[in-house]
Structures are given as C-alpha cells and as structure tokens.
Length: 238
View 1 (cartoon, rainbow, N blue to C red):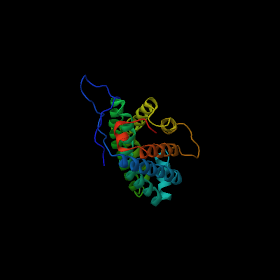
View 2 (cartoon, rainbow, N blue to C red; view 1 turned 45 degrees about the vertical axis):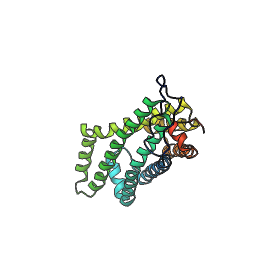
View 3 (cartoon, one colour; view 1 turned 120 degrees about the horizontal axis):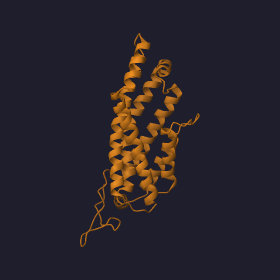
C-alpha cells in the first residue's frame, strides 16, 4: 500500500501553494524485496562466473564453458533473472534521493533504465556464445564473436550498460551522501564497488560484488524501517 502524498518543506513551494515531493515509482515493500533479490542474484552470477572461469578472452571463455556447460548456463540464467530486480533496486536507491534532489534522482532512474537494456543485451549475447560452443569450427566462432564485440552493434550493447548502471549508482550514491538520508557507509560502499568493478583494478580472489550486496542489504534494511510516509517524503530518519 502506498501512502498518500503529504506536504513537505524540503521542496521549494510557490507562494501560497502546498508542494508535494514527486510520487514514488515503486512501493516501499517492493523496493526492499528488489534490493535484496537483485543484489543476491547478481552476486550469485558473479561467483558462478568465477567458478566456471569466465574472463575477458573469448577463446578462454569457450574452453571454460565447455568444461562446465551446465554451471555456465545456470549463471547466465540467474544473471538474466536478476536484471529486472536490479532495475527496481536502482530505482529504489534513486527514490531515497529524489524528494530532496529531484533532478539528480530522476536522472539516476533514467540511467538505470538505460543500463538495464544494455545488461539484458549482454546476457542475450552471452547465451548465444554458449550455443556457439557446440559448433564444429570453434576458431571461426571465436573470431566471429570477437569481431562482433568490437563492432558498432557490440558497443551499442556495452556502452548503455556501462554508462547506465554505473552512472545510476554513482548519481544516487552522491545524492545519498549529500542528503544524508541513510548511513554514510552505504553510499561509500557503493562507490568502492564502482571503483573496483568498473575500474579494471586487480581484485584477487574476492569478487567485488559482495560490496554491492552488502550495501544493497543495508539500504533495504533502512527502507524497511521507514513508514510509507517517510518513503514518500524522503524523511532522513534512519
């Protein structure tokens, strides 16, 4: 159940007019579930990928997937299921900022939607890669996929994911730090995840997605403790 909009002094009002914050796109309980489920499934996909031995090299991926095809497909399926939950989780993250910083919060939501389409595209292409493992001329398939990845079409899939997902988390994290509506460790953990996961730094055997999972659970707990009114207005009560 979504609370009715209530007046707030956090948003500048025109003289003589009561202004309400932008309506929440999703309900509070939906936000809590999406944050936990999306981050958990995304973390599971990352761990399965490490177990399978996935990497940036197409030929090495083919060998790894051929050795553990069932686990590889399981990871891709889990990751694909996670995408809509991740979208709702990012929307929930931006919603905490949006009542006090409407432009930044709305921009974060739009970027999340763009990133979702890119992420779905990456998973669709990866499923095609798994099917290509069984082709007799593996060298030709590797060459074809490498050419596709470096083509304009490949960039149209990767760039929206990179800019959309990373940009949404970045904007929302900045907003959370500025508005202080959650404990600072949550946005700081999200930012650290961005640096390690998208920065290309060697992270060793520990996958950085655990940071995203921890921050998402922390955010979910914060949202769960709020009332529907606080979820609507962006109240800073923690």
